[in-house]
Length: 312
Image (cartoon, rainbow, N blue to C red; front, side, top):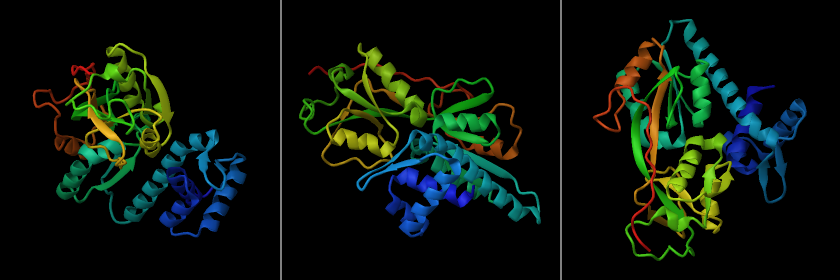
């Protein structure tokens, strides 16, 4: 199995398009198709279902995503290590983050660290929260930015960002034209709630269920395997969706975004191994902001989700 085949697979899996994958890889579409075909033959399973209109991951393809990411990241790390090995031992820092964390707190921290510690070989991987925790425990990552709460004894954590979630609703929803600064969550008890799958984002998945329970109802859940697909389902009128105020996704113009009061809270938690003596890790931690200045340096993540107050 070749690393380039796994890179090709990852691009098709992320875009669900052989055409867009070929553009990203600077390869022709027939070459991408042949590479995926050879990989499927080698593994003995189909990774995608393909029609003239649609490309989708098979269950086997979904299982391969995280393994492929890790193998490619490891290959990149080996390449960097060998490039520097002949000269000197280069300190490294391997960071994982969710897309939400990248757009809120991780990017400025990485930028500040690179400016202050230019001699450290830094790598940044976008991973779901659960995959980050696994890689931290197996020492494949040094620091993670996951969605809280985090409850693992071997890991230390600090809440570095909090933001209120807002609700995206279809344009024809009964509440779309309500002139109200905020709406109680219970108003949406009859709607389907579109959420990322637990594999993709277990923290948000659980937060939605907890918030709805606090409002007195059990939500009807529609799971998505791709973040992009979640917002598209709202536009199609299939349900409602919680997003952060700094969401890194494109929101269609035809949907409505409403505030929920009190708003569910999304937390970004910086996580590292509690027994890690690494100097680069310690220096990186010192750059971390605190979501609440009154918090101690090390704190477990705490989320507060409740119902609403505006009457409709």
